[in-house]
Amino acid sequence: MGVDVGPVFNSSMNVETLEHGHSLHTSSSMFFDDDGKPKRSGNVWTASAHIITAVIGSGVLSLAWAIAQLGWVAGPAVMFLFSFVIYYTSTLLSDCYRSGDPVTGKRNYTYMDAVRANLGGIKVKICGWIQYINLFGVAIGYTIAASISMMAIEKSNCFHKNGDDSPCHTSSNMYMIIFGVTEIIFSQIPDFDQISWLSMVAAVMSFTYSSIGLGLGISQVVSNGGFKGSATGVTIGSVTEMQKIWRSLQAFGDIAFAYSYSIILIEIQDTIRAPPPSEAKVMKRATLLSVAVTTFFYLLCGCMGYAAFGDASKGNLLTGFGFYNPYWLLDIANAAVVVHLVGAYQVYCQPLFAFIESWAIKQFPNSDFITREISVSYWSSKTYKLNIFRLIWRTAFVILTTVISMLLPFFNDVVGLLGALSFWPLTVYFPIEMYIVQKKVPRWSTKWVCLQMLSLACLAISISSATGSIAGVVGDLGVYKPFKSNN
Image (cartoon, rainbow, N blue to C red):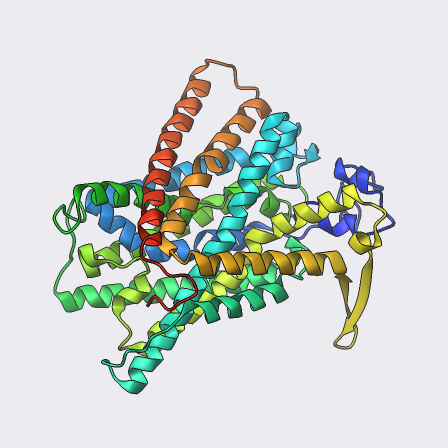
């Protein structure tokens, strides 16, 4: 439900009171939960849909490339490693939704609220900057991914119409603008809890294109007469020794990005209906279900993609099949990618939207520009609460991410860098530190030492992966010309 964005726009409620988790309602009722907010209706299935929408995103398309850099041994092993770490730290984080008692304790509405309640101090500001910069980066990554799929549809249809030898030059700029306009419209949905339907649609789309990619991969393997690839991945000779190192490190970032959703876990948990059972128990079940399903799909898509194309696996699996036949099936898959990314963009950006709007209301509680809502009627009995500040700020955000995407359309490098930068601090460090405080884990106890060792190991992975991705961005910038067709 984001950061109090629903209730704080109600002028009859006290902003400062809601900001600290209290309300005009002292107990839950038919229409309100124990914190005075409208009754939450989420369950294990809606939470799973939100997670799957966030997890099975554009990252799945780069997994065949990632496994190609690591090989048959390290590739799947690294994928299992990340799935375990994500699941484990997510269960730790879910225990931090409520401070104190897991059923009646004060709710933490956002990831940063949980950090503030458990850690406090400078760590709150550090977490906030990392989290919201990462959400901003994810919006850029999703814009790039959507444009790639839309370009693939255009190329596929062009080749089918004009022949395989046609030049069919395309530019991603127009498609990024189309995606941006679409996101401007959907970004006006006021609240995270109101986009459950969009998450459901996006989750179905993610399974659609993943299944098509998997099916085409199996078909390609059969056509090849066997599996391609090797135990160690891309061989030195086809790439330099240094390129092998950089790409292997970048592959870690790509896999980390494919699993990244911890930064919005608390917001997703805040949509779950009140106990019993506790929100933490429901969230843990949703996490187990979602991570198991996504890992299964990731292994199938990544491994079958690598088996189909071997060392020649593309950064985007769907472009590896070329733009020929069955062109209509590839069009369906790429269209599903675009629809999914429309929803995933909102799932990730709604918490950032809510944070900025909550902060603005706290700073300027008497400003009509920020707090006033205008009722706009649509259909027969429906009304939309239009807020001018929300309209302008969210539109500006989408425009900015679109322009940056046009300047840096390097999907694999951006994905790897985002995964590397967010993995350790947001997925590992803060959840572990909050859990230690919440559960009062004794310093230097066996559990404390194991948790710290896990954190240090993941830090090393993040630093190494970020280094590889930065090297990739630097290399791509050397040959790229902004705002021109580079295809």
